[in-house]
Image (cartoon, rainbow, N blue to C red; front, side):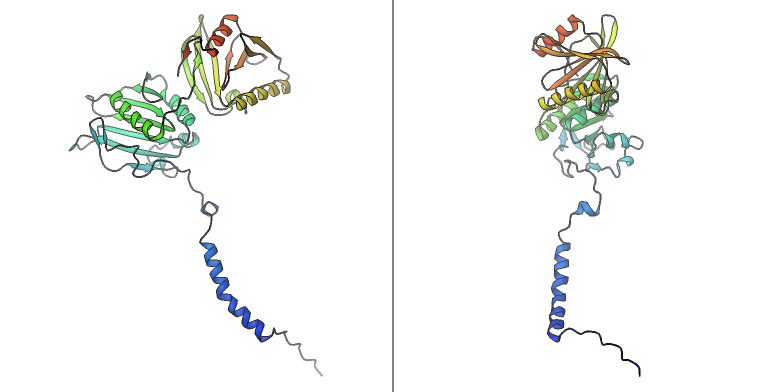
Length: 322
């Protein structure tokens, strides 16, 4: 005789009824929980810019010209549409957004002035891009720092890097650059980058290195400047930071010298701590911490040179400004 199959256990009727009643409550809880999600977990968003669609960073009127049409805005996703081939450079430099505004006289079919306003997140990033892009252009006193080339003008103000192109020979680039720089300063404030060197000679070159200066992973955001001094060229670099950051930078240098068995010694001179390095690759060079900056010079530590640096550090000497 066949054995009957065992019956599936059945929960009491009251328990089953309670479970059925819970189903709508569970569905409601899942719905409400879905309204409070972190969007960054489900999509990658580009870094946000402070330039809004109706930003006061672009005034309606600028030194007698009127803004023509709406301001165009670009993000990381579509920057290549405006500067194809150069977009990656700006993105790697801290790009947050680009806004493009056009200005002209009422009734004109073509703009007399085009303004590219790059938001680079930090003033230091804007500074680095300006130095990279300027090349051998003529320095002008616009914004925190500016350069002019023909009917083109570029300058920085706060976190912004500005390119201006004029298409009317009767207009003066400095006039519109100064007006826009004043407007930006009123919106975002002014910032002194304090990238000033001692006057070590005639400036020959300037460049900004964002990361790994001379291959050193701890030496970033460095301004390098070439000087012609006593008939030959020397290279100097400057790094900025808080007192704690400069102290940490000195410690990193010392750790690097010990690890590579590179001879160095500290020399107290004119109230400053100079570090003289006997580098088998670079030759003799030295650096000196000066409060919230550190200056290095790739040449021998001559007394006349260190005296000039000490005078600069103590507010008695002249500076080589960017």
